[in-house]
Amino acid sequence: MTYDIIATLGPACASPEIWQEMIAAGATQFRLNSSHLSVAEVVAWVERLRVYFDLHRLSLPVVVDLQGSKWRLGQVPTAELSAGQCVRLIHASKSHTQAVLPVPHNDFFAAAPVSSRELRLNDAKVLLDIEEIGADFILARVTQGGTIAAHKGITFAESGFRAEGLGEKDRSVLTATQQYPFVRYAISYVKDVDEMIAYRKQIGATIYLIAKLERRQAVEDAQTIAMEADEVWLCRGDLGAELGPVGMAAAAFRFSEIVASLPMPTILAGQVLEHMTEKPTPTRSEITAMYAALQQAYQGFVLSDETAIGRFPVESVRAAAQFRPSAGA
Image (cartoon, rainbow, N blue to C red; front, top):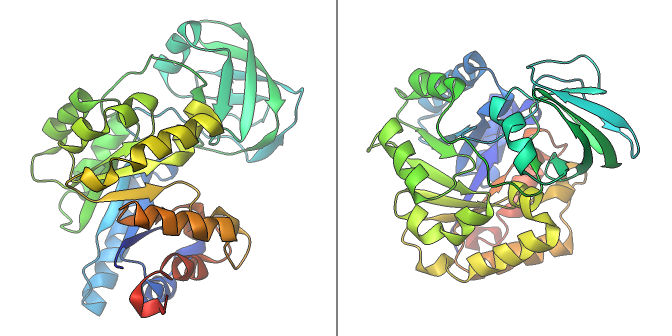
């Protein structure tokens, strides 16, 4: 049983020595999430990888995750929000206090009047109830506390509003990295096939493009979206933020029924081995879910926090690889 393991790079695996260990453990691709990096930082990572690949005569794909139309917080200190706490969301790129959350997207505030009253942050780990909406601010109360940090995702529980197209930063990342032949691009929050066609025209017909399915409509239109992509990822984190845990599970189950019929690689992403962010071994539930995904014809997994910021990046890759024949499974 062969399949891909896409390991996200970050502070926990920033050295070539760890890259080598991750490759030896079973990583077949690396990933960079540009939402958490400046354009200059993305280029620096890619250039370091180029030097490393040249030195070791390696050729691994590097997936650069583009923000697409996804909403994220701006710069804000990492902090814990508590249930009952009041927060103010403003149209800004930076804040110095957890009581004021910056959202650097005009359309986020335009969407508020036609969306649900519940806001979901950080893959729905933090929930807010909207109490007042202004032209460029929202007042809300925390109903489920948790950790917030810079560039974490934010969305309404229900909203049909979303501006499409690549933003200025995404375009800058593309311009700065397209000369590297090993770079691929993953498009976040693809809505439908028309949006995917527009991305393809904007980025280029010969560039390897990955469609990330993170919205209800995208999962429902997966077969048509897939025809305009080179690869498809089912991303359970943001899908769960939009649909809630039960809705996400139902959507993922329905999608699993068509995975085998898709003509391009289909990858499972989103908290695949989340337990291993802090612990050296996976849970039985995680292992069972991975095995089931492979039986459903998924062709690989994306490791995110597990490798980017987790305590056991190499062990996480090794755990993800254990169904391969060489692992003795």
